[in-house]
Length: 99
Image (cartoon, rainbow, N blue to C red):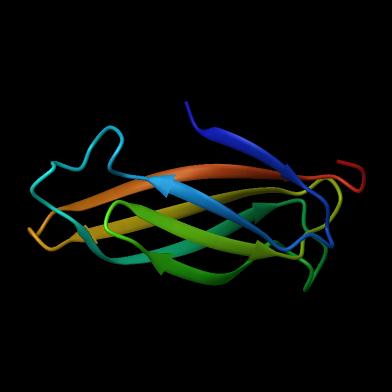
């Protein structure tokens, strides 16, 4: 099941993806990550977008902004570890004018 969050179009929010909680072995750490977003129902030029991505030893922080009321955005996060592992996770954002 994909985790779902809500945001208003004007919100700029950060979301943490904790890879250490269920997947990352104690002997390994994250060293890189990317995040991409795909949207349904967004107005032209107003879709949810990635503002920034940062990596700590176990967590990826994804900052998002923009959006259109009624839009459903799926954020894909791909993390790489110092031990050579790669893991993909997703979360969904529902945009509403009133959250």
